[in-house]
Structures are given as C-alpha cells and as structure tokens.
Length: 393
Image (cartoon, rainbow, N blue to C red; front, side, top):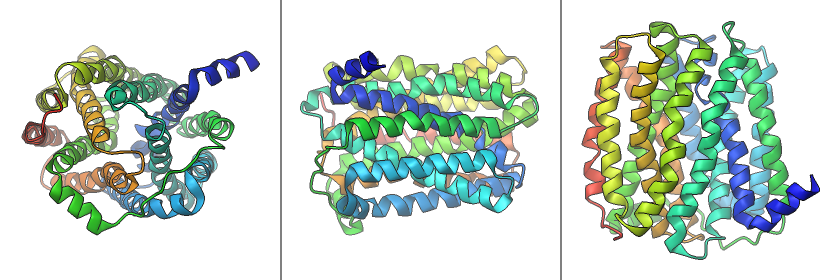
C-alpha cells in the first residue's frame, strides 16, 4: 500500500486527480442508467422525467451559488463536504424503502455530483501551467472517468440482475466514493485557493454577448447535455420494456456503447492541440450523433450486436463533441474565472432540466420511439455552433 501511495505521489497532482476521476466515474455511471427505472417503481414515465427535471433545476441553482461556498470555505472543504454528503445520499438510496426519502436522496445525489465535478475543474485548472497541453490533459481526465463508464454499467447490470434489485447498484455506487474522499483528504488538504468570483448573472450575459466563441461553445455543450438527458431517462426504459432486453444484456450494450469515449477523447484532444483545431471535430461529432440517433428509430431487432453497434456510433459523435467543447472552452478561461466556469457547468443540469420537459411534452402526441427522430434532427441543426467558432489553429 505504501508503494502504491508513493507512486501516485511521484506522478504529481494530475495523477491523483486522474485516479479520483476514475473512482468518481464508477460512482456516477454505476447508477446513471438505472435511475429512471429505479424511480419508475414509484412513478409513471412522465413523472420520472418531471422529477429528473426538477432535480436538475435545483442543481442549476446550486451551481449558481457555488461561488459563495468557494469564497467562504475554499475548494478543498467544498469538495469534501459535497462528496461526503453524496456518499450518504447514495447509501440512502440503497437502504431506504420510503418513497419520500428516495426522492430526497435522489435529488441530493443529482445536485452534489456536479459540485464535486466543479471542484475537480478548479483543482485541475489551477495546476495547469501550459495551455497548449489543455487538450491532452483534459482528454486524459475525461478518459479516466469514462473508462469507469465502460465497466460500471456491466457490473451494475449483473448486480441488479433479472429480479431488478436496484439497491445493490446504489450500494456499490456509494462505496466507489470512499477512494475519492481519501484522495481529496490526502493530496489536496494544502490546496491554495485562487480569488473566487461569486456568479453574477449580469457578468454572465455580458461575457456571452461580448465573446461569441463562449456563446457557441456553450450552446454546443448544452445541446450535448440535452441529447444525454433523453438517452439517460428513456433509453433504459425503451431497451428494457419495449425491446425486451434483460438488465445484464443492457449492461453489455451500454459497455459497447461507451467504448468510443475511452478510445476517442484523448486522441481527439491531441489532434485538436496539434493539427486541426476543435471546430472541425466538433462539427463531425454533431453530424455523426444526429444521423446515428435517427437510425435508432429504424432498428427493428433484438440483436445485442446490432443495438450495441448503432448506439456506439452515437457515442463516437458525442465523444468528439464533449472532448472538443471541453478543450475549446478551457482554452478561453483561466483557473480564477469561476463565474464563467459556473455558467459552463450549469449547462449539464440545464440540459437535464429542459430535455425531460420537452420529451414529456412530445410524448403526449407521439410514441417513445419517435423521440429518436426528433433528437437526431436537433443534433444535425446543432452543427451551426461549431462552424461559427473562431478556429484555434
């Protein structure tokens, strides 16, 4: 154990952040794709979307005020408290049998995950000395989390099993946070905070108005999060209830679907740093995600191979979008730009707020499978945003 700790210490702050990102990824993705099915034990499909939207709206409010907590307590304490409370919320989801408490614990989990990720951003950005390495460093950071995304749905699928015992997945999710807490306490207790800015909505609108690149890269990030919200809420329900896959089978499909994140994001960051720039790869991501999502509508088979292949192509597109929006955005800001960083990180819960409401409204007039056509068209229209960016090359 001592040898392992010395090795991580020699790797420096990035090694510790990569390790923490890996375990936090296991925590998040262990339940990311089963939350909607877990909640559906208590709610209708429409109500599940509504609860996801409400929890995400609360997350927007939390991220809007996170600068206050950072200024008062510092990033180290904020990261510790947010992660510890999230661990307790995950344990609550694993052991509660009370409907009301399940809703409370789910909302807490939803709110606190982005706060911890926000703290990761500050730790990472304030140790970044060479902006020309932003793409590769961010690519490794994202790839570590998404390496966990490959395996945690498979593990959760088998933990849940054919009997749909979701509690085992939530217990595993909670335990994954223990190493994250240990790394924060061990490595970052002496972290020196920059001067934080409390989020100003006036500053937000002025920044977006004056810097069109910030606006378009943020719009691209929002569309990607909107895209994810439909998949996360409705894909597991669709695969389980309408196509007829078991949870172990769904775990395998999700494993294959997420492979592009591990294979693409780091190389894409390197390519963007040295050769193409971000806008071309980002545009290719929107086109790929759009056409492959529309293909889901036409997929009339129970073949695991066919579903895995089509869904994997959708993630080729979003892996490019995610890597390029992260790289482009963080080339525009410094570590103390917490007000602008708050805006960017609010786009995830904002997408998860707007997305389920839009999907719920559409489901009044159409069947679930038609959502894939609508979503594909939205992503194809989103290609306008990367093309309007000023190229970094």
